[in-house]
Image (cartoon, rainbow, N blue to C red; front, side):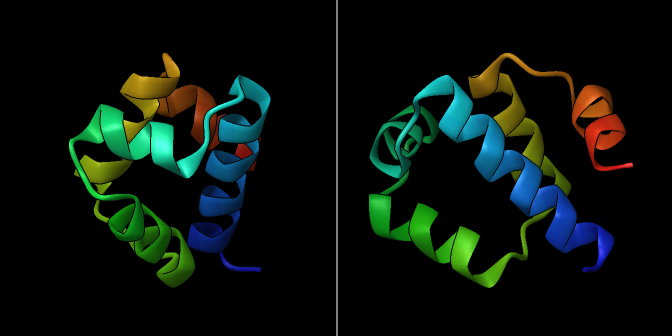
Length: 69
């Protein structure tokens, strides 16, 4: 598994732990649920999007990166 795939999996795990659905995340990010699903299906997102998701999760990006490492 590549580092980026591991990072996406870690984000998914954090969402599950927080009890956040893709629909809830989409509302927080101001996106359509289908857009969020597409982002995670592709597994390719810019760092700015990861930062936004971390903000919603109240999680520091460095903490997330350490979990992947």
